Image (tube, rainbow, N blue to C red; front, side):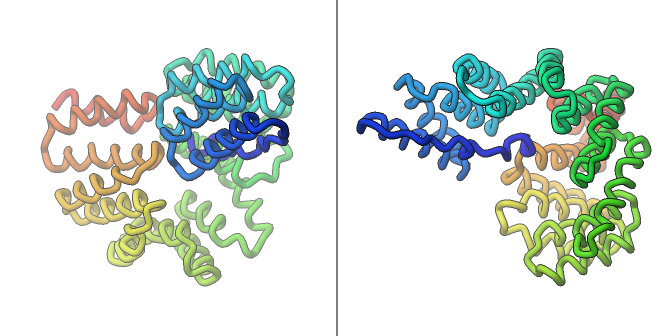
Length: 349
């Protein structure tokens, strides 16, 4: 969700003039955009609904409502809002309709309507068969639906001639998320070729080296990144994971502890601390860190924390609790093969 939602509503700057009431509606819309950016999703939704009631800027306002609902994982309501945005989008440019359609496809996928999401991707690709982003998204949807050949076809079409490091890394992460790391390794190697063209991309080199399990190289690159920018949070957190993979729990713990007070990355830091405790067999303490991290986690962060929570309860031999947690997990993340394996194991305990 995070990746799709980074396209900001503020790209729709309203160049309007006229009577005071029009200005008030425009100001209320812009207030909704500001509330959305700062994370006040319920207040943003209210602002956009007031704009809708005015009968003005319906396409923009419904898109705002959809984003507010999407951020709150209210996928059914998000679908309705994005559909209404498209119904009122006459006169809008193609890019506006494309963006709303992608939001709608994402919402449909998470509302267990994958076939309808696929129809949206197919329609967008029929309009532009070289749309790299849509090809990637359709490939991901195909992979999650079990169509690995179709997914690879889309990924290869998206990757053809591309020098976008993030595209290749995202494709690899789709395979990794389904436990198919080896199948995605070719895309990872391509990502490394791209970042090696720039001597200053230490974080990116470190990240790819981490995925390739070249931990010594990853450590050196991340240390170089932190020397460049001592406040580089992502490099510090990743270095903690590298230390953990190198069985250097003390240094890993130090990296993670440094960031538990930063609300933007606290979930990742707490998850790292939980992994440190798990590595040392301190499962009760690990569970405390998981619970602390869940208070800060978005959907992506919560997934890792919830999976670790299942593993912790297994190691505490609290089988009934672990089984309930695993059942809830596979409902939330039905394509997660690791989660499915844990659930199958626990059903027989």
